[in-house]
Amino acid sequence: MKATNARYWVVVFALALAMIRYIQRVAISQAIVPISLELNLSKAEQGMILGAFGLSYALFEIPMGLLGDKLGVRWVLSQLVLAWSAFLALHGAVWNLTSLWIARFLFGAGEAGCFPNLTRMLSAWLPVSERVKAQAVMWAFGRWGGALAPPVAYLAIYHLGWRWGFVALACLGVTWVAFFLPWFRNDPAEHKSVNAAELKLLESSRKLVLHDHGMPWYRLLLQRDIGFLGLQYFFFSYTWYFYVTWLPTWLQQARGLTALESAGYAMLPLAAGGCGSIISGFLPLSIPRKWVAICGFTATAVLICIIPNVPGVVLPMALMALASLCSDLTMPISWNTCVEIGKQYTATVSSTMNMLGNFAGFVGPVVFGFILQSTGNNWSIVMYTMAAAALGSALCWFFIEPDRDRA
Image (tube, rainbow, N blue to C red; front, side, top):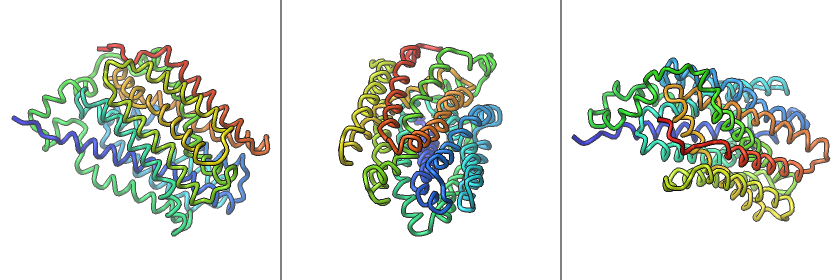
């Protein structure tokens, strides 16, 4: 009997949500300039707004991951997508700094459960041989969705204004749920489109993720690998959040571009990062993943250090895109390590790593804003701190063993 291919539809749903989620998340980087003009926000206040997402995203990671592990991906993920889409639409109704910060905070809380639950979903629905590749492609599509966000957000803001633009982008999430909820099942064995041959392919994956392996979730979180995974993800995110928050502002205010021109250039780091995930996911298994990560982050640090000393726009953005590609080589490696450690608590372990990492989503944008305000817009200092963070990530990988057999 030939195996059916229902599992590939799960991949399609994951890729679609990864793109939608990043488009919705990154749109603020294009909207922050007109928002700050209308609401009269200073650089420090803009940093607070851009950091609110990262703060709630980090705080709610573990609760949202635990919900997915305990209640199942189907119900939890559907409710989360509807909730964060509603909070995104509320961005269009804000009237001052406080209301915008609250809307942004709630939006981040909703999105916190996305990738941990997608990771659990893919881990149950894909055989081991396909899992890392699927993670790589999912992260690539997420990055490419983020790359599309600047021009998409610019068009929405240009035609609808920033208030109604957020409402329009929120509709993408509602549409995804309308297709996902009727089709998906937590256990492939319960899906009518999965035949016996395909179910046999998924036997080891279902056993890994859906069965009790006897260790409490909180003991898993005390393992050394989880601590260093979270720390390297914190440093990684500190650098990466510049691309999705302050980059358009840098292009407009430091390099003299228009809003439309900056939207085009702001696509490059995320587009290149997606390519890095693809490259990493399809590397031969004989190449040690630890050294892929160490070399990738070291190259990122060197490239970012060069950017402040390079005039113009094209070459600095090429360097930034290459830096993003190098650091994103680690994405499938990090998330697959969470699966191998977490097993039935995959969503909890991956959300722990993501929580620790995405505290930088709060710290980075806020620190960048205060640096700019206190130094008279010295962007070089901002980028040197980004390079230092990339070196911190490289050092962490000396203490992580992604290739270790954890069976």
